[in-house]
Length: 156
Image (cartoon, rainbow, N blue to C red; front, side, top):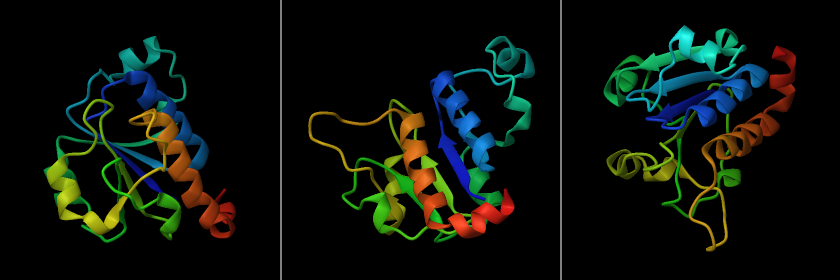
């Protein structure tokens, strides 16, 4: 299975859609605070996220806590518009961590600067500046699944 890491997500509908994606793919969802919305049981129930309890969810206070708890690895990939290396040129492995930044700011610049060889992008025309967070997550996660489908299929 794969790990989706959302750093400071701001829009609850995007995180909800990504949560549904995680449930349907068996991916673990990591949310790194601060969050732009409430994920209490009452709030998600009110939002109609009746599948939220099925998500393999981990919530972190900040990136430092995340990195202290999860082995730092060369299997971390950082989605950004600030690189020219397309995601489909990378070989993903089950267990990889796919990082996505907030809808308004993306991933922190200092994080991207530390790991330039692990930065990936979704090619786009110059007409737009970015894709929706949930769409971007789906594109990259399903490429990772496609590359590992035989082993992945056995776990389903």
